Length: 258
Image (tube, rainbow, N blue to C red):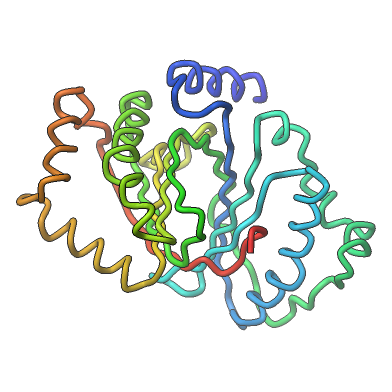
């Protein structure tokens, strides 16, 4: 499996040399909570986040985040960030929760009796291939998942979007952030393989709603900058970058960068 993973990683990285200086990986971990949701959030923020920060300080990974779905408040997403494939390969999933780590972080294992956690699907691993950051964290996100039969076209389309539609707005919009990537591991259990992903971050729920309403309501009659992007995308042969798409809305609750 590791050999297959690195072969595919090499395919994505070396065919899109301008995406980043090195492969940056995110492992996404989805779960559903039954019972006392606030107790679950508190345990995650006071126990797991502190241990995640310790792991970052020790160079075991690059970061950790916790998001809550705004479609269904009992659904959560955890993000595990890795600087490169080697850091991911060396990651010990139990070490960061060990008793020695708990003593270093000065935390105690939380009481999970008030809730149950379900994991409807396994971990998903993505390589981030384009990114545009404002320097201030977003409070809300839209996750767009795509099914694409041509990862290279998908990557190049989102690189173009980042350059033309996101980066010019960052200075005037603190809290706006963007990233896109390609799934590296797929187990074949889902009917549709959503193997492409993008993250649109906003400073507030109001900013998110206004952005979604604007683009969905005026896509057929776009403004000048959107027209320029669509023209550039068409001329570069990047318009048909995906066959399926679904979106979800999330609130960022905790992060090792807080």
